[in-house]
Image (tube, rainbow, N blue to C red; front, side, top):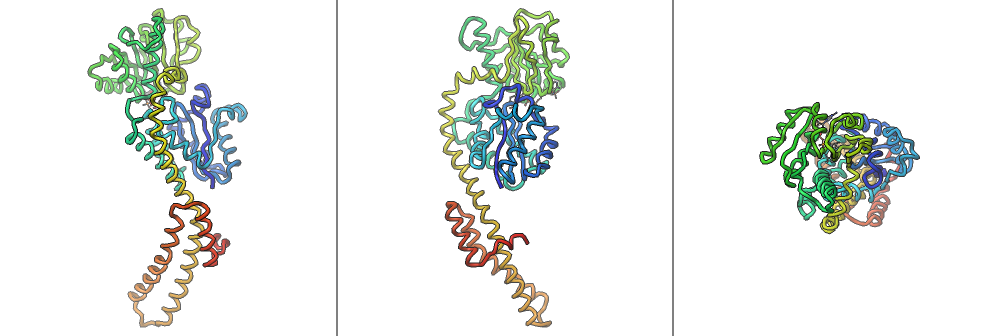
Amino acid sequence: MHLAVIGLSHRTAPVEIRERLSIPEQTMEDSLQQLRNEEQVLEASILSTCNRLEIYTLLRHPELGVSAVGSFLSRLSGLGVEQLSPHLFTYHHEEAVDHLLRVAAGLDSLVLGEGQILSQVKKMVRLGQEHRSVGPILNRLMNQAVSTGKRVRTETNLGTGAVSISSAAVELAQLKVGQARCLDQLVGLDEEQVAVVGAGRMSRLLLQHLQAKGCRGVVLLNRTVARAELMAADFPALPVQCRPITDLDHCLSTCSLVFTSTAAEEPIIDAERLHPLNRRSSLMLVDIGVPRNIAADVGDLAGVQRFDVDDLQEVVNRNQEARREMAQEAEALLAEESRLFLEWWDGLEAVPVLNRLRRQLEEIRESELQKALSRMGPDFSARERKVVEALSKGIINKILHPPVTHLRAPQSRQQRHQSMRTLAELFDLNEGSDES
Ligand SMILES: NC(=O)c1ccc[n+]([C@@H]2O[C@H](COP(=O)([O-])OP(=O)(O)OC[C@H]3O[C@@H](n4cnc5c(N)ncnc54)[C@H](OP(=O)(O)O)[C@@H]3O)[C@@H](O)[C@H]2O)c1
């Protein structure tokens, strides 16, 4: 058995590649099923977010398994293996464990320490369990990742400060509006006519940050207006006008700053839509959707500036240093959690030899019990038989307890292998008996 993660992220692939590999929740079951149908794949789990697609898997054979997952990703993206490979990373065993723990802690995020990734890891756990693509190993690893993410957020300073892709998007807008006024600094957004398209989790965070940055009001467009209205009610201090998404053209004509964060799978704004509109002289579009909500061709139109998630790097770099120092605090905690998982994994190595021992003792118990019972003859009541049987089982369990505890306890691989060999020699535990 071999643990690995194969995937891509904002560190290895631009948004135009990442958006080809985004798996919405509706098709997750099918993707997990495809992976489980691979002969090499024993367990699989998929983390799909705007910034990453990662496949955690338990494989029969490392190279064959990784290649099977690579082919799956190639089919999913419609890109040839040669085109996709330069954007993929693969980590094995210990590195795969460390990677997942870093991801759950927010240490691999574009915005270091952002909180949304932990909910996305929890979602991966839920979907893997619901669709039965994970077994005991990945289940244990995923749950360890969730508890690591929680610990980092409660036990270190990284969890403080509400950073997210949305906060970075608002900061980018502040920076770009500032630059348009020939100031190389973040400015307030009080002079902008602002719209937010979408009323999901990221839009809620956008409203929070817009309010904090002095925005005077927002037009909130959504397919389902009632959802937008519910959200607006949570911002009593920010004037929010809720409109149906069908008002998008009007909004693009009158607003100066438009954020898009919908889960639409195709762009909802492109040059063909924008071109005929009687727009203001300048329009800034900030798109945090992945797949992108705004087509790249709008950037060719005069007076239009378009930014997507990859452009957030510019603001992220500005304040990453302080957060990187905070991230140091989390490192010791990650090392501890990783060690716990790997010790548990190493303990699994002893399972076959312990199973053989249990089987051998069970055979002895069964045959000696039958001999004793036949000697007792018919005078022995059913109740007495049960008592003797329970006694024999109790003795076996007591005998097994010390070797089980010893072999599963944290220790070096070498020590464990030595103990396993000794046990096998002393009890003549022939490996062939495993097959039965
Ligand atoms: N969650 C994150 O941490 C995160 C981080 C960065 C970027 N993103 C990206 O941000 C976007 C929104 O994520 P979210 O977590 O806020 O999603 P969400 O909570 O699921 O909300 C989805 C929003 O998209 C709208 N929507 C869905 N399909 C649409 C369509 N075909 N046309 C127009 N509107 C549509 C929904 O409208 P209704 O209310 O009418 O259904 C809803 O307002 C996604 O592209 C995601 O990849 C998410």
